[in-house]
Image (cartoon, rainbow, N blue to C red; front, top):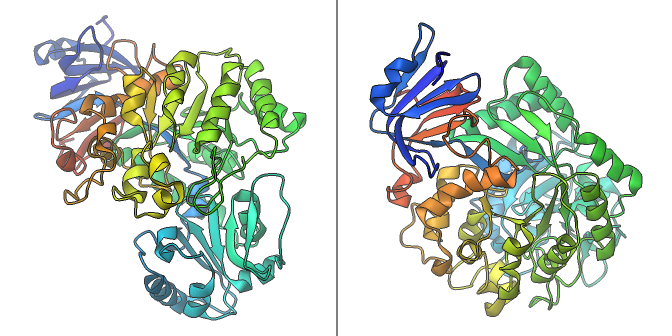
Length: 543
């Protein structure tokens, strides 16, 4: 270390640096937002000056700062308004929850909810009948389903929106109809959902800012130092600017604006222009596409129809228009991110990227990758495309016996080639891991544990889903650190505890490489450091 003294020195019995040149250490010095020195406890004394803060974590483990590969922090504010329905498992439960939530409503007020799992309907149609049973015909109800791609609304809400029959959309969205051509209340994909969501009451800006800051603080307390935010719509820009005017963001945010079907040259050029937007801990870098929807909603793009005869079409009615839009942005230096869940969708995206230039250090990436034939797996390494996946999608919403809605729709063959995290790693792919909050919880400890267990952490009686796809502890940690850095084009300055790298660190009471995953999912996060500054400190850690 040079004569410059450290701003902060962190000591821990175990430091997993993920740096092959020095994989283990016990002390890290931080100065001017960078790692200034890495070594043993005996060396740390020489790094300290009169203004150096020293934090000794004792028998703890320090790792590079964790990065969530995929989430929706701003869009999630809207999607988590109202009553949490994520624990609802039957239609009768849904009725009871809504009835209780409606007790405090005034006349004409909306009843909002989120996190509803279509498995609640036990394989039957998703309709507004339970909503009417719960609150009657004259209460407007809007419920986000868990997949963030669909909603269930009451007849009153449809009347307010003027939705009485089918609608035509530029994308693969739809208003679901019954046998008589009447809307059931089930809305698939954004354009259909927005028919009703635009009528919801606006949240006061100060309240939104407070909720976003509280959310980011919760994420930092879970060990996250950065996140890839797959949204930059609505008031995103105003929100993050306002938060930074009030103080530093608790973690770094990297936004990718959404590109919709039918986006013309002006819309694409706006995305190019947005790449210049940045603050101290946030920036716009990339563009988010969707080539398909979801298996649960019947809007994925499969090579053969699902068991309901659905999921046969892409989200972009003309897939070549998607290809042209991706390639236009790429030739203007914009890295692309594409949601692709079904086998046909993944295949088309990879074909597109095979002919797409990359003019920056940031690789193109594909998100979710839920069901994928074996011939596509090696293409991720061959094309240098990042595979970005969310292990808790598998563990929270599918079952080993294929009794869940997702597996039933796909059938055993396609459900049996699902969430192939280990196959991708074995094939040499760059695998970034994340949560997709609010679709699943944002806590990275649980995501890493589930990636190893292939079941939900803390539930040892659950049968693992395709256990051969389990990651090792090292692979899971790399998915939030070294792979996340490489996916952002930052392999030379982030993702490892190495001199000259970003001063982003996460400390756990337990060792993520040695602890039992069920226990690690509950292990206290002792310290989270962003840009060399403490953004979270467990109360058990002394000042």
